[in-house]
Image (cartoon, rainbow, N blue to C red):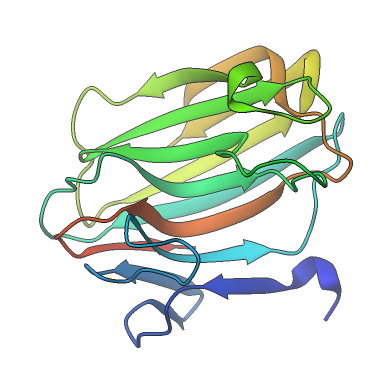
Length: 202
């Protein structure tokens, strides 16, 4: 297996956190699933890809996601898919360059960018591109296709389709001025919350 196909699990190791069956990856987070290093304010079950995306190159990413029936999401923030930066030496961690988020039971698509060599919160721009007007249907698969080009100096491009409908067509600064490119993460990453939340990907 090449390094580009490797993925790394990030969870506390409970049996429910991460399962793969018949090509479907299932991620479940329960109250108290706090990964060491995250502290008590975050809960996660994700996988992270070892493959890095190069700035200035266009990529196409396709996936399907289904939120299982259950209690409504009450976390103040949650991500299902991230394209997270590879932080430069001396750079503090920051939120991802692209994220598919959950706001309650609605999906939202956001990006961040900074052209600074060492990014700080003061110079990171946050852009909300799309937010659902109605809650997602629990138990229903949603098919996503992304075309994305990272360029923090203004030549970036993001197009997002869901179930064949275009949700985002953005041209402008996108991503961070990093030595090594971003990488894909999927799963459930949220503010610590009392309810159990599960998402499936394929």
